[in-house]
Length: 382
Image: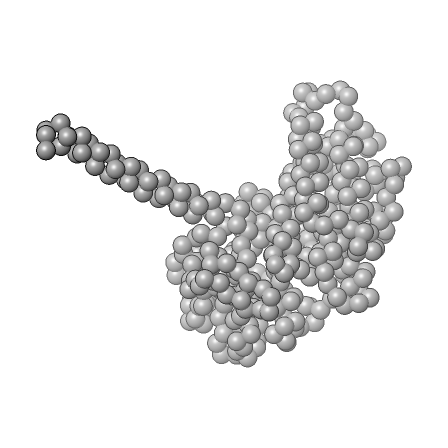
């Protein structure tokens, strides 16, 4: 073999090796990108929460979740006793449909919310928790784990530090924040909330929240909204032992009138509840104390006087047209007939459209266009 031929063959072999190395590097980059992309909206790649993955678990008939989603951590009663100082009243932060709610500090430093109720152990409970814990989204409060010991059932959720949006919203409440929520900020909260509910409805089969209300919408330190208690009413219905606070009541303003009549929930009953939430977000008032405001919204017309409804704390930070567009959407969501309500994915897109328009029109004071009718024109100067 000549030296020239040997050199040529050696160069060709080296080229093949380089191509192979390049192919491996490209493959690794693609895999890393796919892994990283899961951390954004689905919030599904926190390594501290990944427990016992399988190719696919089907825990309910017709319901499944893919392998890239996490399972729930099984914590011991001893761990939770340490986390809550033996469930001290100092750490008691509330009471919900599942029972008492405690703030806890796990040994790994994670802050959690622990819901506890007396109940005998149940495998169905574990199955339901595994299913619900698999559902992750930026705008949903994540179910992280569970515990069944000493005739107690416990659910462990991520802790959301800023509490319910209702504590910041209702005008006249003793705990109301002095912070002014501009219209576009409220629209951002509404948009994130719609995305959370929309994600539940996009599952196969759709997961109906069944108990969505303003009090079940939490906000983090950046006021990112997170829907709490997704599927919790359904869990209690399936495993039994639901307490009085978990059952639908006739005087609940968030409850779809069709559910009151039939007892059957649907994705459209969630849309109705979301409409009531939007109404509270705009007015800054509790629908329970002003039931007539729901009837006003259901009968909304372009000629309706909106100044009595809109929360004055928003000042002039909105356009009249943007507010009327949102009120039209609210009226649609609150239609007494469920088949006439829009789907949540449409509601999400419409709120985003209104929000983008408001952000472009309601600029810093002095920079807005004079052709836009601002909200200040709704109110009579004092």
